[in-house]
Structures are given as C-alpha cells and as structure tokens.
Image 1 (cartoon, rainbow, N blue to C red):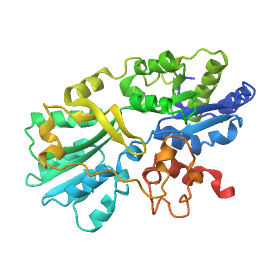
Image 2: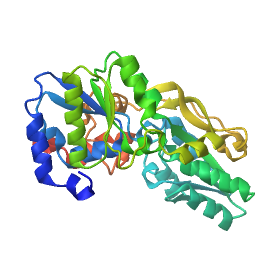
Image 3: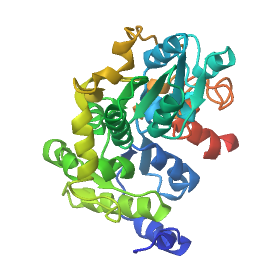
Length: 364
C-alpha cells in the first residue's frame, strides 16, 4: 500500500480485520497516545470491529487536555493586564481554570484572539506596536518547532512586544510514567504519527530495551491503525518486542533534523506539570537564556497559581486510561461540549469529546 486512497479502501480494512480475529485469545491492552488517533479510532469504529479481547485504550495524547489548570489561571491573570492581547489556538478557549476560562474572560472584555499559528501572533505584534502580544504556546513536539521559529524571527526582527506563555510537553517521559504506574496494564503502544514526524523512531527504543514493550508508529487512516494492531499482535505472539515504523511515508528514523535543531536552539528541557499526572521530570520545554526575553512569566513577573483538582471530574483517570468517559458521573449529564467541566471534553482531540461524538454510549 503506497497511496492514501489505498489506506481508505474498505476492502483492505475488512481483510485486515478478518486476519486479526483469530490471532490470539489473550487479553491485549494497546494504548494510543495521540489525540488524532483517538478521534480516528472512534470515527472509524475500530473498537467495535476488533475482537473483544483486544482493547484500545486512550492515553494522554491530547496536548490541551494535559495542560494544567494553573496554566489557564496564569493566562487569565495575564489577560487582566492593560494593553495585553492574548493570542491562542481556538481549542484553548473553553478549557476550565480554577474559576474561569478564556472564553469567559473574552466575554468580560479582555482582548483574546484566536490564531492559527505562532506566526500569526508575530504579525499581531508588528501590527500593534503599542500592545503586548502573549501567545499561549501549547503542544507536544509537533508544535514546538513553530514556536521556536517564531521566537527566532522575533529576535532577528528586534520585536519587543511578543511573548510566549509556554506549556510544551515531551512524549517520551509520559510514556515512562505510564509504564511505571502499576495500576495501568499496557501491553503495547500505538505511537503518535505527528510527534514521531519530528522526533523520529529512535527515541522509542527504550520501550523494548527497558520494558519489553512493543510500539508501532502509525498513521491516521483505518488501515494504518489496523495494520499496526496486527503487527503488535504478531510481536506479542512471538515474544519479540520491537519498535516498528508503520508510517514511513512521513516518519524518518532520526526524525526532522531541522525541526529538532530549532527546538534545541530556543528551548531547554525542564520538569513540567501535567494535568492529571502532576510534575513529570524533564517532560517540558522552557525558553532558554538566549530567548527568555520572550518569556511571559518572567517579563510580567507572575507565578503559576497552585493547582486544584476539579471536583468530580475524572479527566485524570481518563488521561491515564484507567477508566473510560462513560464511567465518569458527569459525562453527558453535566459535562458536554457546550458545557465542558474538564479539558477532555473541551478539545476536539479529547477522549471525552471523541466518546461524545462517536461512541455508541447512547445505545447502552
């Protein structure tokens, strides 16, 4: 299979499903750690067509979902400052902080604008020289290079009114965290295609070297994921843990070398707080000393407020794959896309949003 339309061919997908049916009687837990995979799995109904002993578990693959509550509180605090424009991706608008959200702040009069890339924030800064533009820089390694390039452009053009409130995360440390949690039983990973396009195949070798766990980097079509699941089952059956690149049309062994160089030039690796996980060592990016003049926290001299748990919201357990959204008492009753209580319902890549939109919970 070489072309995208082949990966969307129902005939091929049915053949793969048929070949999977009798591969094993053992219960197998496979976790995906990419929000786009989560949405694709539910969109294509893969959980419903796989044998009942093969369980797909949604992990912390949604960057908006793992952004901590106190980050939102800091953004809201910054929005109160005179002559500040907050620039953000749209899926951050409804994420709840301790007492409010960016959407609520906008309705109260704060200048909060939706942008589609960090470069849009740079353009805003050029067009509004007497305003301070603060870009909410959130995401995994996929979006970090864009922030890095924007910071480099801002420095080269002597832009003084652009700042970044960063909450960039690294995938590898959270995989380790999941495997160290004795309450989570993971047999293999569907590894993220977008992140892997940046970091490559090489960083995942620890999975089989240290944990004897297999992982397959996969794309986002139904056939992509079904082929990857079949490969995983074969590796488990043969007791040969490996990292397989099933997305070679996009992902290279060493990743995107230029993107990684931009990240290294602008950022340093630091301990980082994840919603639902707490602080994970060496799991985040922060602007380094050469670019800290763009750090909103340092420039405006604010500190992240203490985190507080959202009452009754089970996003923490959902992000770890310990429960499904339908096991949360708020799901669909109080927590909906129109009235999200937790971030897993806010983002289009969130597990709760995927369940709400596609899963057959309505029929249960």
